[in-house]
Image (tube, rainbow, N blue to C red; front, side):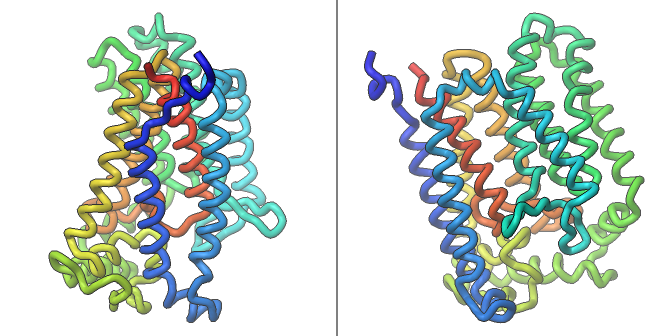
Length: 360
């Protein structure tokens, strides 16, 4: 069979991704133009940086999609070790922004190693689980695998608890997919809750966030949450219209970041927000289809890891914006402003496309 016949990419997944990325860029411009003009005298400031990151990520996605995904098994361990080393570097030489030390600078560019860590963990766990698949029914194997990712969870969680939760969630989903026994996940759940409890207790501001979540009107730091809820409520069913948000005019701080879903609801209403959520659901559905039809376990685990990542991150972001859970500082994939996030999300999509291209 010739190469062109082998490479049949998932058209539905590609269409949903393209629509989501384009919609994300349009929404980002609408949300960030005011802040860009006020801070940098350029309404296109955030859009231009996001376009550059999107182009870079698209190139990475193309390369990843063209490479046989089996080759990533040879560098999965090295990739994970690199993620650990980069996370250690953040603690010592990382750049601090808004009170959080999450960035490393490389000349004029900066990036978040935690975003790279998500992709590295998916490949690493897919490799380790595939290697130990015959032993996955034993609690000892499960605990060994979970112990392997605790270093990256701990290092990332020291400055970014939400990303640590996502990484832990990815690990739980992948082990669940590969394990023939379900009872042992009760133990995993208890260990995970204990681990998160330790992180909450280590930093007083995390406990403060719980108090703010319960009564945002009683705290000055609850301002962002309240303004986001006002934005959602004022949008109604069909919204004020694209570009017509009032809350983005300084009322919702840094509206182009974590709180962008509230501006979507204000400008496009529940109908427009529903369309965005539908695109995410289509992506997640195609991840599931790719995982269930993959030609081997390694490919199925890559697709399952991407599915878990997308699902958990979208749920966390919308839960924070609607004040269903305490504020965790997590972006909405492909929509929120964040170059590193977009680059590695698109590279991760390339891995899934590589798996889907070999589905028979």
